[in-house]
Image (cartoon, rainbow, N blue to C red; front, side, top):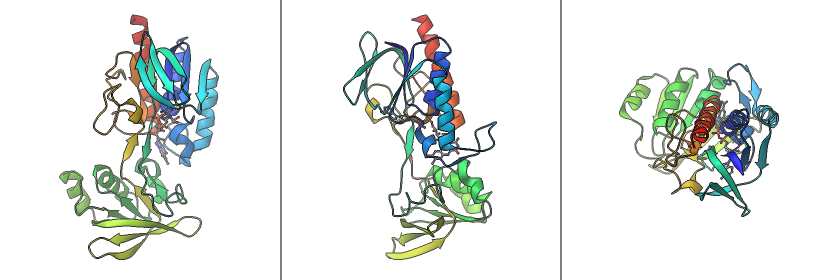
Length: 303
Ligand code: FAD
């Protein structure tokens, strides 16, 4: 039996594990894939105090730091259910049931993909999902933002300050972003907004993105835009489908946490991209992992 069982081995779960182990707690991590989204990241330039690193390198550092303590890492294991008997119970896909006095949920999230040819091939080579992370790589170049919701228009405004020009492509006939954001975007000289545009292909030269193709849904015509980067902003989906009914989620599926990282179920804490904490970043996920572990520690010493 664990004192603290953590579901998710990304930056949030790793931070929670280190904080828990350093309190002398019997700590376990269940992870479908240790490292999480960081394992898919090419360059990281905003992990404070490290000028530049790469995803796999940061994952290796995370793992060696966690392994420095007595943490039971159960990698390649998927949690499918959270229940409670005397102790909390996490059921794995293989049928095993793990028991713990407290839980930290940090299953992260995944960016919704366009699912068009070229997207996977050029991921990290012009296809990007995070303007805070990759915006500066496109300084002085032309980029597109796919998606005209709040995150898309925020991304366009953010990028317009760095890049030469931003084209926003929205599938629908109108933008779904807040009016103030749309007004701000329209006031900027280097943002073009195209609605009724269905992106159909990412174009590349074998090395990097050189453009994209979309269908003008008003007349079915296929059009090409030349650019160096494509920011896909069509939604971040939390990996919380299996938690529905167990803890309170927002309509978008984010785990609702309080200032101590506690969920609606006492003794169950959560951290990182899977929660309703704003801004999805490595450093923020780590901070919230520490908060959740300390919150859970506080719970354990009182119960
Ligand atoms: P994740 O990293 O998503 O980790 C989730 C963990 O939970 C994984 O181990 C996963 O396997 C596991 N898991 C999920 N479901 C289950 C389950 N049911 N059972 C067991 N385990 C489960 N942020 C930056 O700060 N800087 C950057 O430069 C940057 N670049 C990025 C580039 C890309 C391509 C992407 C996708 C993201 C980038 N981000 C960047 C965002 C950053 O990676 C995330 O904010 C951060 O990884 C979130 O950490 P997390 O621990 O909450 O979740």
